[in-house]
Length: 243
Length: 250
Ligand SMILES: Nc1ncnc2c1ncn2[C@@H]1O[C@H](COP(=O)(O)OP(=O)(O)OP(=O)(O)O)[C@@H](O)[C@H]1O
Ligand SMILES: [Mg+2]
Image (cartoon, rainbow over all chains, first blue to last red; front, side, top):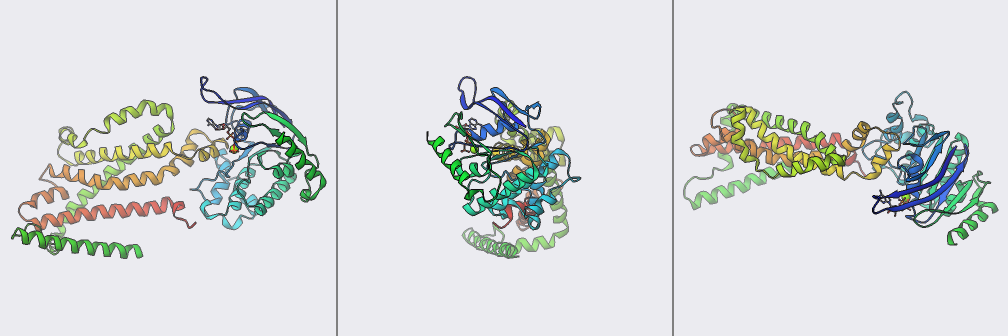
C-alpha cells in the first residue's frame, strides 16, 4: 500500500522558491497500479523522487505500508528515466547492484531474472554495448532483483521505438500480474498510461497539481490496446489533458 | 601491435630530426656542440651499467612520488569535489597554495629532508599532488546526477556512493592527470637531482657530463625520455585494464 497526503515539494532556498509539486494526494492498495500523466517538465520526476524517499517534501507526507517514508527503502525499487545504468559496470554487476548495496549479494543474485528477461547471454557486456531496449531490461532486472513491494518507474520507455516500447510494456504488464508488486509510473505518453494504469491521475503544468482522475480498471490483458475500454480511456485522458 | 609499430616509426623519425639538427648546428658553429643520436646511443651502450643505476634511481623516485601523490590527492580531491560543505572550506586553501611556484620550495626542502632521495621524492610528490587533486575535484564535481540517484535510490550509504560511483567515474580523469603529470614530474625530478651533482639519478648524471663529455650527457637525456615513455605506456595499459568500459565497441 502506498499513500500520499497533500504532497508539496519546493526546490531552491526559502528566498527563491520554485514549486514543483503541489497538494498531491492519492491512495493505492497492494498490487494495484497507478499512472501519473502530465506535460514535460511539470514535476513528474520530482513527485516520484518524493515517493521513493530521495526528496523530503516541504509539506505533506508519503506512507508505504504503515510507515512514513523518510528515506530510500530496501523494499521500494525505482527505475530511472534512462534506466540509470552505471557505464563502468557490466550487465551482471548493474543488475546485481541493488543487492550488493543491500549486502545480500552474492547469497541472492539476479541470475534468474536476467534469464527471464532474455539477458542471459549478455551478462559480461557493458551498457555501451547494448541496444536501448536491452538497457531498459537491465534496469528492470535490477529493480526486480530485490523483489520490491513497490515499483516506481519514471518514464521507463521514453525514447524507445514504438515496437520495442510496446514489447517492454507487455513485459511490465506480465511481471506486474505475476509478481504482485504495487506499481506507480509517471509518463507523458497517453497510451502507456492507459495500458498500464488501473488508475490514472492527470497532472497540470508546473507546479504539478491533480487536474483529473481516470479510472481504467480493465487493465490486464495483453491485447488490451485493441479493446473499446482502452480507446475510451485514451479519449478521456486526451480530454483531461486539453482541458 | 599497430601501436608498437607507430611508436617505433615515431622514434626513428625523431632520431632523424635530431641528426639533421645536430649536423646543422655543428656546421654553423663549426665545432661539435650538439652530439648526434649515434654518438649518444653509443654512449648509452658504453655506459650501460652506470646509466642503468642512475635510471633505476630516478625511476624509483618518480614512481614513489606518484604513489604518494595519488594516495594523498585522490581521496581528498574526491571528497572536496563531492561534499559541498568541505569544498567551501578547503578549496580556498588549495587555490591560495596552488600558484606558489613549487621550484622555490626545493632549497627549503633540502633543509628539511637533507640532500638524499627524500627531498627529490617530496618535491615531485608535491607537484603531482596538486595536479591530481585539482583534476579529481573537478571530475567529482561533474558526475552525472543520474548515476548518483541510481545508487542513492537503492539505499547506498556514503561509502558505497564513493565505491560504486564517484571513484570509478573519476578514474579516467585521475589517470589522465597522472599522465600529464609525468612530464612535469620528470622536469622537477631533473631540477632536484641537478641540485646535488653527487649521488645517483639521471639528473646528476646529465649535469656531471653536460660541459665535458656531452655525448654522455645526451645519453642521460635519452634515458630520461625513455623513463617518461615507459611510465606513459604503463599508465595507458593500466587504464585499458581498469577502465575497460571506456574502450568497448559501440
Ligand atoms: N534539483 C533541482 N533543483 C531545482 N529545480 C529543479 C531540480 N530538479 C528539477 N527542477 C525543476 O522542477 C521542475 C520539475 O522538474 P521534473 O524533472 O520533476 O519534471 P518532469 O515532469 O519529470 O520533466 P520531464 O518530462 O522533462 O522528465 C522543472 O521546472 C525543473 O526545472
Ligand atoms: Mg522527468
